[in-house]
Amino acid sequence: MTAPLTGRPVISASGLFTPPESITNEELVASFNAFVDQHNAANPDAEALAYSSVEFIEKASGIKARHVMSKAAILDPDTMCPRLPERGNDEISVMAEIGVIAAREALARAGRKPEDVDAVLCAASNMQRPYPAMAIEIQQALGIEGFGFDMNVACSSATFGIQTAADYIRAGNAKSVLVVSPEITSGHLNWRDRDSHFIFGDVATAVLVEDAAIAPAQHWEILGTKLKTVFSNNIRNNFGFLNRAHPDSAGSADKLFVQEGRKVFKEVVPMVAQMILEEADRLGLDPVALRRLWLHQANAGMNRLIAQRVLGHEASEDESPTVLDTYGNTSSAGSIIAFHKHSADLGAGDTGLICSFGAGYSAGTVFVRKVA
Ligand code: CO8
Image (tube, rainbow, N blue to C red):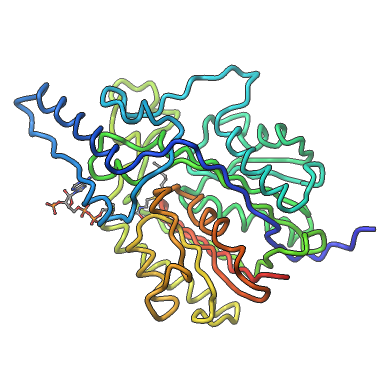
């Protein structure tokens, strides 16, 4: 007989899909600089484009490589964007396919059968299409009954998804919810933009949020979730269904990711550090005693500063692990990859924080405690 539901949300398990192909900074810069040479030779009267550099990328961001879904096309100076063959309506979509792989891992780790899941949220910074929802395709591919829908809060999509799932559990509207974040960021990155061409990578993550009553013995109690948004144009993408066919907009760089990176850095660090400290206080947690921070992976320097303000000292790799070096910024999936790869070693009673921040601006905190 199943125990009565508690209304207490937990993270039962997580899953990860990593694309097999990866681009090093050296490969990326060689391709970018070949494009620059071609462009400058073809436009002798225009202001010359400048080279990118491996040293700058690593120093400014901490990124050494990124996984991608379509390496050859991205590195081809004549293409410089992913080329993923279109699929028929009777085939699974690429985003759904990688989301399903991550979701299957989360279900297997939790010992959960698809028929026991009530809902699927596809939470990511871009959807492959507006409808039918990616979440419903993932739900169908997994054989889940119930419902699914898509949600987009840029880099904070996954934490906003976790809070939404946790609220379903708290309200008793669901007992098991999958939050899937397939992030094919290479499709909305401008690979010809020197300021940002090195930032992003592709990945998919999944988090299974459940009622404590049905969770596997090893799980993470969700102590509290908090979301925040403050409008900013400093990270923006103007692509949309209303401008797709507009003659003025064809090929415009503003229909891809654009940012004022330095302003983002300066404004988001204090906002997020303060939010974490306020939420820890509200939950009666000593921030200094947090065993691990799984922070959004956008910039190593940003994470260093945020972790320092929260913990009161320079965080070690053990206290604030980095996956940015090999994955790049994977938008909402970043903090979940860090959690997935660096949480098994913690002991019962250890507390930690999953935290996202990015475009919107948006930020989300999920404080967790390991059980068993
Ligand atoms: N190679 C060599 N030199 C370069 C390069 C390059 N590739 N790019 C810039 N430079 C030069 C500049 O020209 C500048 O030169 P000068 O001083 O002569 O003018 C110098 O380097 C310094 O440039 P910056 O001031 O821009 O460099 P920063 O030190 O600020 O580093 C960063 C730039 C890495 C972008 C840094 O500001 C940063 O990481 N900021 C935070 C960004 C951030 O967190 N953004 C979040 C975005 S993610 C998000 O919200 C999700 C959105 C949805 C997903 C989108 C998927 C595509």
